[in-house]
Length: 109
Length: 115
Image 1 (cartoon, rainbow over the protein chains, first blue to last red):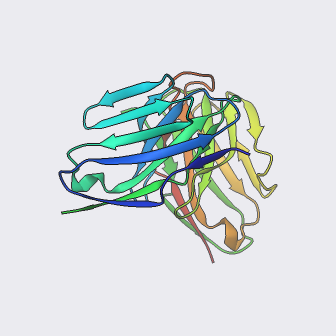
Image 2: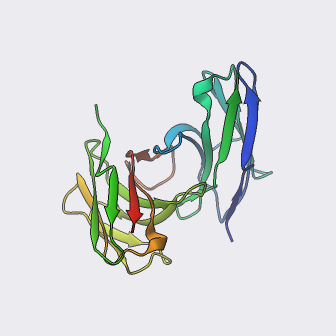
Image 3: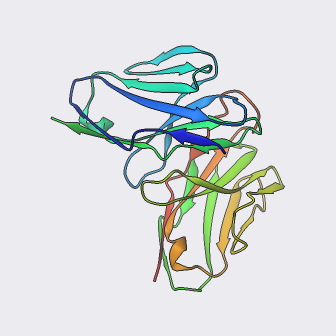
């Protein structure tokens, strides 16, 4: 079966750095997406990786290793507004998005 | 601003009473998706349209139906809602379904309560 694993919950301090990991086992791979979802709201797109390596976008970076079936989302200079769930999703060989359950990130002052 | 709009934002229905959720988009995207998301769970794809081509997920109950009368609009019909259908229903769009950064753009969701 297809599977996406992420930690259920993480806690970090305002101003710090946090890394959210995602491991996946899917039938084929056509890219990995990270989405942010605030409580009661829709997911919003953060990043896309299809090649190995690091993609940087402001305070957020996303890394991919296809051989290890592994990605992480790195958030720097954390702000209170970064408190949200972060969902990892992989596009499989049928171009379907397989979603993780999300990591709830709690930011403390 | 180009966007995905869902109405209503909150819907309350009675057990077994049909309900229709609507979604519209101004992005002119070819693909529209309906997801069901329960608390602390991954979004679950119910079906999607590529233009007028309907694609149903194998495990989507028959209780859920969809219509896409034109490019801009898509509807989710729940024929006989059960208590287990209470969830957030998310509509999303994308330009295409192929490879590449075809990220999905989500509407704000409709939270369905079944009494």
